[in-house]
Image (cartoon, rainbow, N blue to C red; front, side, top):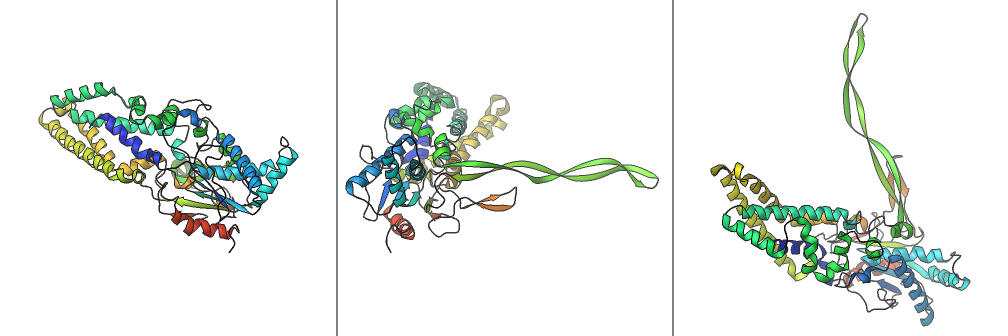
Length: 448
């Protein structure tokens, strides 16, 4: 088992939706469909295909403005005057929410002509619903802090694998020599070398944005990617910003003694307890789109990232099982040698611990991938909590609920509809028939 194969597993498992998220033909409306017979337009998601990084230079603000222009012009040319809805999957989710906010702002934009403002008004008045399907509505949590969180976790995982390989190689001199030969051959000696080999493993995908983001590329290089980071300027200005609420919560007690009078003639040290408070911060979402606009959230909950690999899932899982067995065997042998051959002095005890850690990683590959995604609840790619905006916010400082936006489609108390599908499979005919079309009827887009 070489380090290159192990890193291949990480990239394949975490981002294997590369070829599964389709993109329409090139053009200004390349990610926006025509108006369907049920009066909705689909906004497709982010392209994980093997394309050059230059394809990601266009910011989401520029793209959404272009999409607004495209829809307005298309409606004028084709004579569309009826109410309509927009439905976005994946990155399309964040774009349809921004579309609603940016289109409404055009109505009073002093930099636009009167005709442009009136066209925006007419189009916005016809917009009756916005629906996101496994949308990156609050951003892609895996990219928090501009890749630094993902980078730290991936580097930590890389060190676990590398140390585990060293532990396997510790068993005999022969495997030690083989290990050194393999590492030198593929040019990997530390977890940090992963970036240098990513383009060898997945050239197009890495060059699209992973390698650029890992190396702290500037905003103009991969603007579209940075716009998907939670809390990005694009999200704060066009989708939702947040208001912080600071509050204190009792988290324990502290004992202290005080010199006190305990009787009319006697003083002594008396023990008292006082509460200990910890300060926390909660964040309330403030959507930029109108609270009057009906919005529906369809949330994917199948968190099995490897399911995005389709027919390759079982191959990857088989590989993980083999890897865990190899590390477990090496762990046992190193443990034995620790006590039988002065292993404490020769490093076998450390090798034993490293093999244990590597074995546990491959046994818990789903949990480890969830950590990369930033949440145990997700659709295989996007954290569940980032796929919707809540109807209400509980203010811990006042103990009261505050409205975020109440005009939510789906008639669910939670404010969203859950479907046990992964990020790719949720965008299917079944979802439209069972959830999207009823939402469109509820909003009055489809006549009952």
